[in-house]
Length: 231
Length: 253
Image: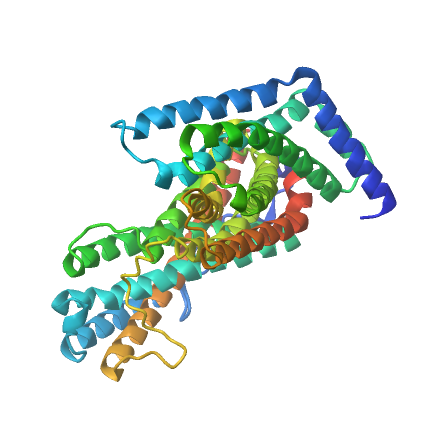
């Protein structure tokens, strides 16, 4: 990315973050959704008081994040489209790929903030062991999975906001594509929470997540012109 | 639709009724011939599978015969998605509506063959393992692929502009095809490692008897020919459908 590209990237990212901080509507609804999901999960799975939920924790956490991310991803372009901002943005001499990376970074920031707030709450609610020693591994899983979610999600959100179905389409195309990432992230997170996270169990999953990220970053980088373009 | 109507009464070349409505159907490599070859190969392969191939007891005895159609169907489904992937790339590079039609028909057939993979897989699973469904990597991969490619049609249905629809369909076919192998690898990460499928092809060879391999290869060839025939037929049908839409539009004005 050139110097101009970097400046444009920073400007676009700042715009998204600033406009979100003024209303905070997305962050607040994502956070409330995440906490509500935990409450629902508790009553869905704790059929008896002594049921051990440890082996469900990874799944609960990632289902919450995937659906929370969907909320944010839909918002990230609906605003632009409704207010006609996107047309203005497309008229500017900005590389389309720069727009993609800025949007993806904004989504990454929002998802990261939500996780920073909800993972501690989740740990208090559901995780029975202190996992300080494995905190680095958990952070690695979170970062790698977030990158994949935001790379694929931003690309698909761009496509779906240009269709008649808008936000209805995104889950239908996003969820089946994210399944591989979900499988890897879920099993890695459960392993960490259940203290079965030996290096042998963790490394293949982290490597898989990194590979998934790389694949979809390359795909998005190569195809974003077509996704956002005039068709 | 709008861009080709505005050509001040100029008749688009495609819309002339005599533009060979059966192109791609006749001839020695046309759709009809390919389907006939396929029927011959599939019947021959099946006869060999029943009368020549030994009945493997360790793989479920007589029920294992479904293997000779199950595996070729699975292979053909993947070929179909690969064709859609290549057609997607070609469309984005050339912007030719023919590639869009090719991709559409390939995904449609891929979805059909995937459904058949699951149907034959479930029948075989019930006979061999005693359950209709198991969350086994390959079966799961096909289920997710089915859901994924259903999204392809939802996507197409929600875009009105033709060139945009074709662009997005091409993009989605590319993304989806990249995702299928990832799904397969990911499902193997599941801790239980529920590996019920016989691992047939290893690095040291296929580990199969000639009497099994030959009928299988014949069935694979037949199923691929069937796909090729249906593909040509489908593409010709789509071309006709578009031509009909143009003609109807002209008639109404």
